[in-house]
Image (cartoon, rainbow, N blue to C red; front, side, top):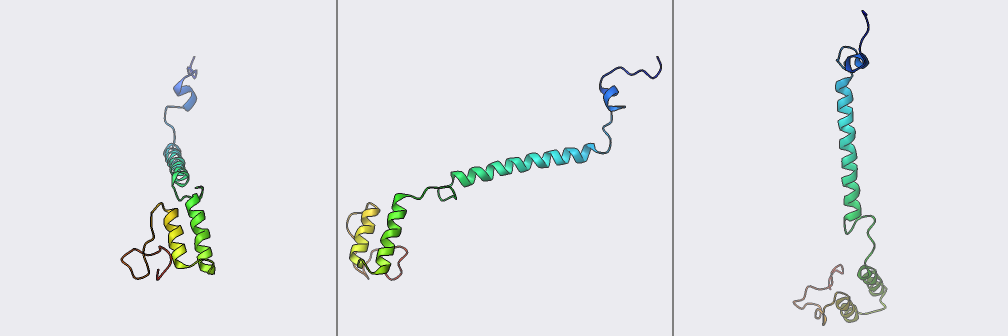
Length: 111
């Protein structure tokens, strides 16, 4: 019965060593696992972030954009712009006249 090897670990892989390819294969497998985890984290961050690529625009931002466009075209004056902007943000009253202690209009220089 010389030369007969019982099926098992030694019968399938020779003498039990995996050869020179074991280390590179292990490193590549771990690198692939790390890349998959990093891709999942990045995808979660993009989807979950409030200003991310897939975030829906808020009604306030759309309304604010239209209001700013109307102000830029000269359809409304400064007082009406401020009053409507305050109403959009849920504030009562205007931020005052130009030069007052109020913070002015965000995104509109000099107001």
